[in-house]
Structures are given as structure tokens and as C-alpha cells.
Length: 442
View (tube, rainbow, N blue to C red):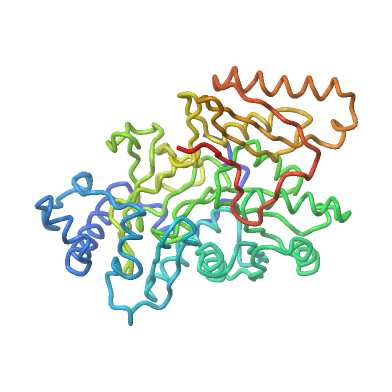
């Protein structure tokens, strides 16, 4: 456990919810889960049918361990019931509708009652307070506003705390920096990759990050490594924390790091989180890596039972120095559908990122290109060099290239061709970074 208790003031937004005893929390979860199952069995045909198939009645759930008897809900189930088939209340009670982009098919649609929006703001306020934000802060939210849940969820949580909120949305990077300068932004909310892009643009504009009022960075929306955190903190001169959420279960606020930066505290009075083996779908032993499965237990419009997130993490149950008692999940390692299988070896983009961040001479911007040539998988890694490295002798570049190739082979048992490119040549992203181009016809 990281030592942080004596050096950091740990503000807690809701001590009643965040410092429950394990017995008290388990009882609350059981009562809310039983009520949720009654509701979906009565009001959602999809769940009623699935319960009937396994001969399950909501009254059969006597303990939290009985939850594992129930079937999973997947993203395809949401799409198959597009748009309102999984809503548990009449549409007249739904005051907000969000959805995914739907780039790979029908979008997933989620709804919120007024009480749901209050719950959402509450759990985001907890997460932001844990990350250092107070009523004295000026919060710049550089997430997209629209059908995407990120911008609105964080907006209302920050307002609930009493912070001043700048809904700058995504894009227009130079204007984002101007706003930081003129409005005295103290907390930045965006993806970690966009935070690095902001730093680059500041350097191009001749803006010294130390001249800004920034203190906090609250980052989510994509997996990122501890090395990238160090890079962001060292270049922006802020404290950077990680947070997690997904539209299907609420949006941001499911979990978030406190200033100990030692795992993300889960809002366990609102969600039950399981970790299962993504192949067998059986629970993994405490502390082992697996796929997160989330059940909502305090949501009215769109409750979901055992939703398969496809996100990979592990449970952390040791006591945190901040004083919160709710369990934590480790930093998201990746997604089951982001995992690359190259000649039988499992590889996540975040593993390549972690390696590159340790190597002097390269920038934290990369792209993976996977192809199949003569029936064999190939991996090409494009990575930007820094300015100093590009002015060195060709021999130095060749040595750096070989070093990266050797490290990938030694660490991950995968052969890769590394191509060094000039600074600022790879695409930058205002939202989630797209690190992989898979050209294989799988």
C-alpha cells in the first residue's frame, strides 16, 4: 500500500456511504439487489424471460452469493432490445437518454430518471472529492458533451461539490489552453492521451504549464499506464488520478482513485462488482485478474444484471490509507476485445505503452499495426522519437530501434518490427486514443 495517509488531506464527500463496515455494506447491497431483481422481473420482458428459463424467482435470492446463479447481460442484449426494451420504467419517467456512437451496429441506449441523475451526481462527487477537487476549484471538462455520458456525468458531479465548471467539451486544443490561462482552471478532466496532446500544444505555443493554475488531473475513458501518469504529472505539474465508468451501468463515477493512487474505490452501495474468467465465466480467486461484471442496485430507469464490461482488472480488498472502506479495483489493463493474439501470444496495447515509456529517446505516442502475411501474423510498432534523437546519427536510431525490438521479444515473446518516426507525425486524439490497426481478416 502506498504511503499517503500522513502527507495528504483525505476529504471524503459522503463518510456514511464510503466508510461503512463490510457487514453493513453487504446487508445494504442484498436489500437493494433483491429490490432490483423484483423490479426487472416485473417490468423488463428480457429479464423475466431469462429468469423463467433458469426457473429463478427474485425471492430465491437469499444471499449475495446467489447472484452468480443469474445469466449475464451483454452489449448485444442491449442492441437487440434497442431502443427502450430494457427500460424498467415508463418513458414518461425518463428525463435523460444517452447512447453509444453505434459505429459497429445499433447503438446502446440508456435512460435515467430524476433520481438516477441525483445518484449519478452523488457518486461522481465522491470520486472527484477523492481526487482532490473541492468547491474552491475551477473544473475544465474537455470530454464531449452530447449522447456520450462522460461530459454530463462529470459536469453534474463537479457542480454538486460546488466547484465552478467550464464545459469546454472536446477539441479546439489551442482554445482549451487559452481557457486554462484566462479562466484559471485548477482541475482538468479528459482522457490521458489528450492531456499529453495538450502539453505538446502548450510547448508549441510557448506556454509554460507552470504558469497555469492547474493542480488536478482526473483522467479516464481509456487504459493508461503508471509510466504515462508519471509523464503527465511531470510535464503538467499536477496530481493525476484514474477513474472508471461505462454508459451501460451509469457513466463515470463507478470507481475512482483517491490521492493514494492505489486502486479505484468502487461505489459499492450503487454497484456490485464481480471479477470472472473471460473464457470460463467463473469467478476468479480474490486478487486475480479477470473481466469486470457489474450489477446496478440503485438505478431506476435502466438497471442491468451481471453486465459483462469486457474490461480487465482485479479486486483489491486491503485497507486504503485514506480511510475509505469500500473495495477497490486495480487500474484497467485493457479490454478482452482489445487483446491482440499474435502467433498464439496474448498482448495488450497497454503493455507496449508501458515498455516504451521506460525507454529514453522516444515519445509516449505509438501505433500498432497487425497484419497477416503468408499465413503468419506480423506486428509493426510505430513510435515517435524525441527531437534530440532525430538529430543524432543514423546509427543511434538503428540502435534504439533494435533495443525496442529486443525488449518486446524478451518481455512478451513476440517478434515485432519497430519503425521510428519523427515527432508529432502520429495522429492525436481528442477522445479515446485508437492505438491498433488490425489488417487481418479474422
